[in-house]
Image (cartoon, rainbow, N blue to C red; front, side, top):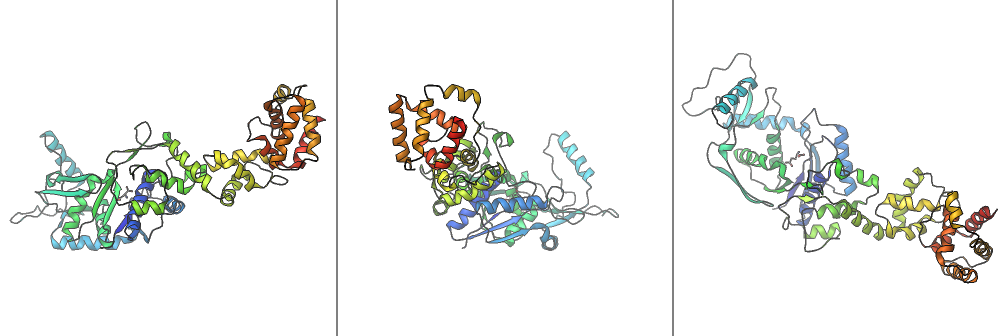
Length: 464
Ligand code: GLU
């Protein structure tokens, strides 16, 4: 058997973290077994589906590198097929026309509620041997209902949650086609999973209640059943449903904030799944491990600090050319002046250790690509009369010193000794004059990167 999984989002909004994780698990499961991963867009809710949302899903999947092997299939393009299957079911007797109006069904439910019963369709139009159906109301368009088994249970061994049993008495005869002939949600999913020969349905546990209905429909169609695995949802760190309050919920906000896809994938993989104490792993490694074992039965909690920690790890691992390509456009937006500035990759090499995001890295790198505008009060505080001769001496010797970190560091020490100063007494005013800020990486590294010309020009401008 070839494993065939699918990701079946409804294009009613962006691709959120929960959806991305479901996609990742379905994709990785197929990869683990050398199977096929299918993308299916469930766009039958015409009022809520938009082309922008379809694009957002494709963009998100693409950014994460979760490439599908088949599809994308769009349910709206499969309407003829659904109608065909409805026709077959009517013919086979596993579905029937029901002429009740929505008002009649509501009245039926009211009566049941009043009698203390569970509200459900009462089977008025359900054909039974020896039963006479009511006369068909003139000019009324019927819905089509699925003839759900009356007795017995639906049981499946959920790949995540273990055995689940639902009594058929809990399920009434589901509408599978509306009066205008359009098919309904659970029916379309069932026909698709059947036609696409899906072997493993991995999805969020908000779908658990749909599964017995889909199993019954698949059985009526004579289809072989996929296995189902329902993944618990993702909660915010406060235990509440994940929402805007917990940070970005759209996957595509993460590249905008400077997260790397491999950090996001690594993070999502560990949300509700574990492999020993492994925290950092590649997708190749994940696909080799991921077989739906070790999935947690309880909801996972979203932890933005951990995501940032992983992102920092992958930034440190990335080569500087790749980082430059990501950092440069952000810096351009921030007005960086690259001309006459140091080599950006050298700056990145110095700063990437401490950056949690590309945007943080870009902000830190701006230090080297804008004119410093030191605050006058800070200058007065740090550039004291005691320090001025040391600055002058340093500036003078900068004209001839060999321009590398080691030589500059030696020069700083020499100036400190001559003037009987401690490192911060010289480093702080230098930082302020050369960069406009008091917090920078090590001063010798900053000097080296700024270059002799810039350092001399800035010191000279100040001493005038
Ligand atoms: N379209 C459904 C959703 O976006 C998923 C259906 C499924 O995976 O069976 O929640």
